[in-house]
Structure formats: C-alpha cells, structure tokens
Length: 539
Image: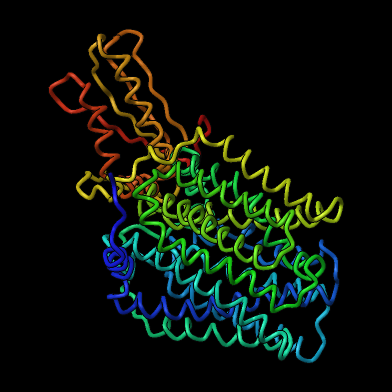
C-alpha cells in the first residue's frame, strides 16, 4: 500500500528552487506584488458596487481585468519567445504601476466613475497580459531543469499565499481608508518586482538565425497547437472547467453585499479562504498525485469545486461558506496547476511561451466571457439558480471530456536534438528569408511493410506540420512500387533551418523509426528546392 511522502521530503523538493538567488528574489517580489494585485481586485469590485450596483456592472470589472489576456495572449506569448524577456517584464510591470497609480489618485479625489474604473482596470489587464507568458517562461532562465516542477509549484503557492492575504488586507484597508488607498498600495507593490528585474543581469542568448517576426511567431505557435494532440486534450479539459468555474468570482461581490448583507471585510475574508485553500492544495498536491493519476485528480477536483458552487446556491451561513471557499480553493489549485504543468511538460523549450499563451488565452477568455455571462444570467433569473447551473455544468463538462486523457501523454525526449545535421545552401541568388522551400525525401520500401511504413509516416506528418511545414504529402511511384517520396513545403529557407533547430530527441526517434523501413544501402535521398520567385503558387 502506498504511503504519502513525509512532510520533510515534500518541503525539501518544494523549496529547492529557493536556493537560486535570482529565483528567490523574484519569488519574494512577486508575492509582494500579488498581494497588491488581490487588494486591487477587491477594491475595484467593491467600488463598482457603489458606483453602479448591478450584477452586470460588477461582473464587468472581472471581465475588464481578464479580457486583455484573451486579446493579447498570443502576441504576448510570441514576444516572450522572440525578444528579451527581462525587458518585456520591466515594461509590463512599469505599465501596471502607472495604471494603478492613476486609478488610485483619481479615486482618492472622487473623480472615478464606473466607466473610468473599467477603463483603468482594462489598462491593468493589458500589463498583466504582456507579463504573464514571459513570467512563466523565465522559470528555466533562473533554475535548472531538475527544479522546474518545484519552481512552478512554488510560484503557484506564492500566488495563492497572496490570494489568501491580499483580499483580507484589501477589505480592511477599504473599510478604513477607501478603495483609493488600495489602488495606491497596489501601485507601490510593483516596485519590488521592477527593482529585482532591473538588477538581474540575464545572460544574452545568441542564435545564428534572425529573430522571428511577431506575426510569423504567432502563426508558428498556432500551427504547433493544431498538430499537437497532447496540447489539444489539455485545452479541452481546461475549457470544460473554466467557463463554469468563473461564476463564483463574478458573483461573489453581489452575494456578499446583497445576499449576506455584509461589507468589504467579509468579501475579503471569503476570498481569503479561497486563497488559503489554494495554499493548502499546493502542499496536498504531492500526496494526491501519489494516490491518483492526473485524470482521477482532475475528476475529484472538479466534483469538489461543483460542491462549493452548490453550497453557495443554497446556504447563507457565513462560516459554512468560508469552509466551502476553502475546499473550492483546494480544487481550484489542483485543477489549474495540473493544466499549467501539463502544458509545460508537453512542449519543447522553443515554443513554451506560445503554448502557455494559448493556455492563458483559454483561461482568461473563459474568465472574461464567463464573468459577463454569469452576471447576465444572475440578473435574468437569480443568483442561486445561476450557481446551480454552474455547478451542474462543471460536472457535465467533466463527463464530456473524460475521454481526453492527460495521463497518457509524452513528456520525455523534448530537449533539442542538437546533433541533427543542418542543410547547407550552395550558390547565390537566393533570399533566405523569402521564397518557399520544397523538401523531398526518397525512400525504398519493401512492399510487405508498406502499410506499416505509411503508419509511421503519419507521425512524421504531425511533426513536420507542427514544426513549420505549410504542406505535407507522401506519394508512391506508379512505375516503381518500392519508391516513395515524402515532400513538404516550408515558408522560407530560414524557416527550414528553424525546423532543424526545433527538432527534439523524441522527434529524432520518430524519424529514425520511419527511416528504418528504408531498404537501400545508402540513406534516403534528400533534396531542397527554393522557389526563386518568392511565391508558392501551387501549394
């Protein structure tokens, strides 16, 4: 019978990234900044209940905060992969500090109205959108790969410590000094991260290839996701939860003020219990993962979260709701950290920022759309009925997506295959950044094994398309049944060289398996053709 790991062993593995000075400084600074962010969230939602006390307007505060992530996640992910992440983070942090300061001063002097609050909340969301993919992608810049999982868990734990503390502090400050003071405290909290990033001297990365352009990098990231079934399974499971899970955060201010008839301190306490549950979940996760596979953990957590929604639909006893929020926090942490870690474990380094940006697009798009939707639903029917629908939808979403297993996915062999040969370009007159490239590979295949060979080539098709091929095909010679030609088209010679840089150890194994069917003494013949006109009119 399996037993849970000791507390000492969990703590040792969880705290090991803190041995690295840069990670430790960034982690501490981010906790301070996140406390300010959660205080800001409480202040903005509570201020809206005074400026425009309707469920729709209160829910729009959450939507305004998360909508920029939906709009900017893909460009932000591309930027995180192609430019210096430290400079991008500095810009995003300074932007958010300025937006929070402006909102704070306007609120202190009673100039803020409902639409100005939404506008400046949207501005803060823009900074958060630019920050998020780069922040998650720098983990491997400050810790070794062996500490990656622990570092991600620590980041999640730090975020949830802030979620436990920030709302309660926010409620206290609002009660004592008003929302404007909360906004100014949030502006000051960004200084901690700005100082650490400014002092960090990140080693420069060099490549012989020119940097990707933003729109080209976005297309590459989308193409990768389209041809990565493991990522698609994660995203489908996330969509099934987030749209319904967003209901509690959208409706909690209205429930607290009008159903419970309590003030901002009670609202902060409820959010604090959600955060405390998430912190507890971070420590419970190692033991839970030892006892359950990923799919079972997701199912248990979704049912637990649905139970919290049902409790809020029918119970108005404050301490019971606090306990329900704590349980919901455990479930929220388990679900979202599993989705996030699964994304990072399923992709190679070169596309990690873009894969995370697609996940963030789904996550924050679900929060933004869900917040607006649940506000409208609550106004049309009732708060209790809305939460019952959300809880039932959480369970139905779980059942509908259980077929997309996350337990059976490839997480090994994603490091670069550095020894894969790079093609050379002989002769002049070719613009490496323009003109599509046609690559052909000729195989000799025993007729008795051709069906098996075609099956192996379908895996290569996904790899080629995922790593940049615009078209792919496999043909057999009508006059020579043993002769097969694989062909694919790439946007440019430079993009073809990037394909070779992107090849992973697992990809190389798939290529070698396919080439094991080749019966000729010499290796398969590879040819490259560059469209000198710069156009691929026949593709």
